[in-house]
Every structure is written in structure tokens, then in C-alpha cells.
Image 1 (tube, one colour):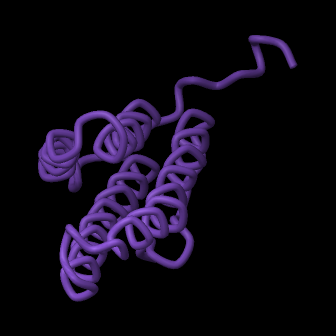
Image 2: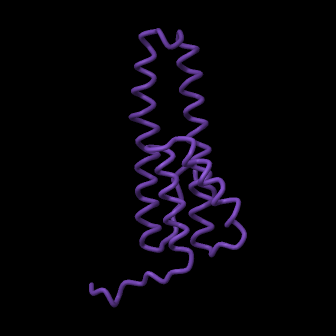
Image 3: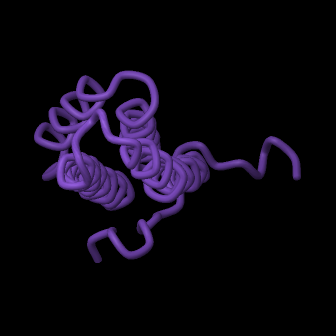
Length: 129
């Protein structure tokens, strides 16, 4: 495959990449701040963005909301299991990170690779249609 066959002029590609990068930043680097930036990007671009970007914006915002809800559920489970001083806390934390958080990051990495390729992506189970 030569450089001439690569098409980087796909409408909405840069915005789709930005949405996926902000989603991953929210999960791994700057939690909260990444979500606020993604929300601002979605509010600003959701109507005028090309279809590719709109799909990635919608998917990443929905996945971010699911990630926040799963984090709340994990904290409620910790509190119900005896609080943060209980031995069960570490079991819940490890289960959350190995099952939920790592899956969300993995899907975000796939979404980012799809955005870089200029292709749509739908998060399995949690992504809106």
C-alpha cells in the first residue's frame, strides 16, 4: 500500500479522532477534565459535524456516561459490602478495573483506530444505534 492510496481527506475524520482521544483521556489521563472537553466538543459540533464525526461523538459521549455510571455502581457496591476499610473493597476494585475499566479502554482504542481509518464505530452493548 503506497501513500497515494491513503485518503486522509475524509470529512469529519479529525473530529472523530479528537472525540476518541478525549474519551481515552477521560478514562486514563485526566478523568473529569477529558469528559468536560468531550461534552463541550459534542455540544459545539453535534449538529454541523459530518456523519462520521457525529457517530464517534455520540458513541464516546454515551460510553463516557456508561463509564461514570459503572464507577458509581462500583462505589455503591463497596459501601454496601462494608465500606472502604473492609477487605472486600479490594475485590470489588480489582473486579471493576479488570472487567469494566479495561474493557472500556480496549473499546476506546478500537474506536480510535477506526476513527484514524475514517470508519464508523459502535461500542458493543453500550453504544447507541
